[in-house]
Structure formats: structure tokens, C-alpha cells
Image (cartoon, helix red, strand yellow):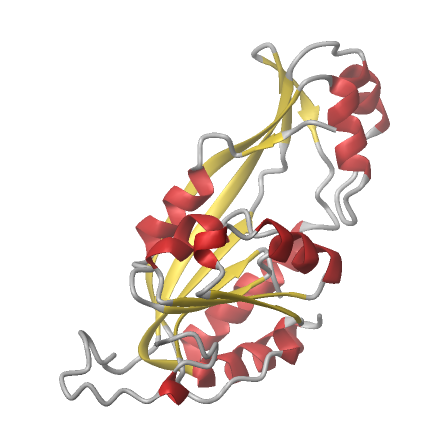
Amino acid sequence: MEPEGVVDVLRELMEVLVPGGVVVDLLSVPPPERVEAGGEILGELDGSRFFPRALEAAAGLDALVAEGLLAQEGEERFPVFIRYPTGRDLVADVAQREFTRMPDELRARVLGVGGPCEIRDNCLVRSFRKPGVRPVGPDPTGLRKRGSDPTGLTP
Amino acid sequence: MTRVVDGEGAHLAAITRAADFRDRRVLEIGGGDGRLTWGFAPSSRSVLVTDPDAESIAAARESCPAELQVKVRFKVASAAEIELDRETIDLVFFSWSL
């Protein structure tokens, strides 16, 4: 999706959010994912096609903050691991990804790993709040309408 | 293929530190196979899981725990295709989406 398209979609999504409602954005960020085995770093995946897309989406939320439609409240970076029984399993999994590639030299090294290995991903979670006050607590009138929940699941 | 994605539960821990999902009407965009949904949905009031990939939504629907089926719904849709009434969602969760 083009950057302007992302912002337009986000603006429309903010319409469904109640005043005071929250947005949570979870994404993978640079540095690139690292392949490790037995405590040794084997190399990095090529995320040069993936990260620009992810960061465009993040920039879209930043644009809404600049417009005053959201206010950022929190941010946390943390590692996440994907574990495989063998290097062959890891190579096969990465081969199915659309925007991430494994360099040939790294692929050869990983294929030689007969035991457990892992990918270390770097994640970022950010939270935002829409200006306004969210109604809190149960409805004291007991008259909450069924139509207030678009999923139709509120009793 | 056998793989373990985030066996430590770091994703779920981080998003629940970032926001309170309890009693919230949640719109999850890019829900995939529901791996994170099953973690926060028990305390949410309701969850609408969307993803543009029909196979992912089918897998999520298939694996939805029985106790969550009363409050979790699924829809094949991209972020641009979601149509809901104004101000009817308490929390929007983007997971590797847009």
C-alpha cells in the first residue's frame, strides 16, 4: 500500500474507535533478523524489501499523531525467537516468506546445521490513544443497546 | 515442518503491557491464524479478527477455542475493506498489518 493510502486507511479506521480508545501497533523493525545456532551467530536475513513496508505503516501512525488524531502513550522494543529442530527446517520456512530472503552464503551455513537453531527477530510495540474520554464502567442505566457492539456478541 | 514461534510469549506479554484488553471491544487487523488472539480474547468483551488472507482466517476459525467462540468473530478483509459503525470499537490492534 502506498504511504498516502496507509494514512487514508488509518484516518478511516480512527472513525470506528471511540473517543479515548486505544491503538496498539506491533511490528518487526531493524536490525535484520539474525540466525543463530548453538550460541553462534550464523548471519542475518535480508530484510531490505520487508522493512520499508513495515516502516511505512509505522510512519502512517506517526502522521496521525502529527495531525492530532492520536497521541502516542508507550513504546517497547523486545526480541522474539522462532525455533527450528534443524537448519533445513529454518531454510524451508524462510523460503516461504514473501519479502524476506536468505543470502546464499548464509543458506549454505544453515543447511549444515543438523540440530536446533533459531531466528532472532526484533519487535516494536507502540500504543496510542484517540483524544477524548472513553465511557468507563458498566452502563448504570442497564440500557446499553445491542447495536453498540458491531460484532453483535454483547449480551 | 516443526517450528516454535515465540515460545516465551514475548509478543503477547508486550501487547498486554502496552494496553488493557479487559472488557474491550477489540478490532484485530492482520490477525493471521489467531496465535495472539487466543491470548488476549479471554478477557476482552468481543473481538473481530480480520486478515486479507482467506486461508489464515479459515485456520483461525478452525482452531478457535470453544470457550471463545461466543465472543470472537472472523472476517476476510484488508484494513482498507473494514466497514464498521462509528465509535463502536474500544481498541484497534495492528499486528504486522497495513
